[in-house]
Length: 157
Image (cartoon, rainbow, N blue to C red; front, side, top):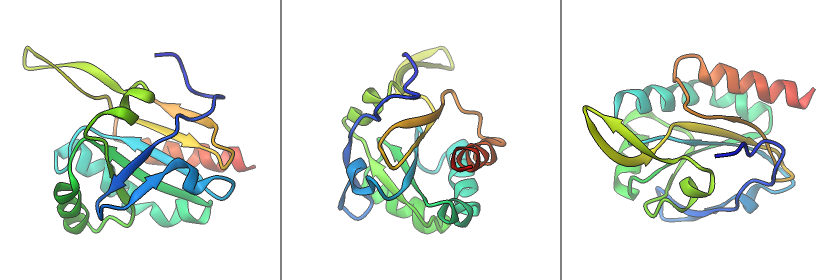
């Protein structure tokens, strides 16, 4: 997949944990969007990542950014995940992998000698004009949220 940095972010309209449609255009001209794709609710790495975003949510908000998590999990799974960990941001349902494919994060993965299609943990920072200003692919959870926060600060200076 070629880099999306400097390009128009692929549009999306996905349901969130409450069944409401959330679209990239909802934030146009108003907010930065931190769009992060993760494989599965309630797994160790995904829980750590979500809680790290939760812990720095106020810092992102002060920088005029909204955080949106995206996975193939359904409404009920997202609701439980949000409630259990007190997540203050929406999780979007990409059960048809449309957004994941548009962003180039729906990949062939290998685990325990088995191959399957799934989400490659990735984050995209989208400016209010709808352009991808920074992307992180094959994200390692440790330290990632601080890196994303620093990138947002740099872009705004």
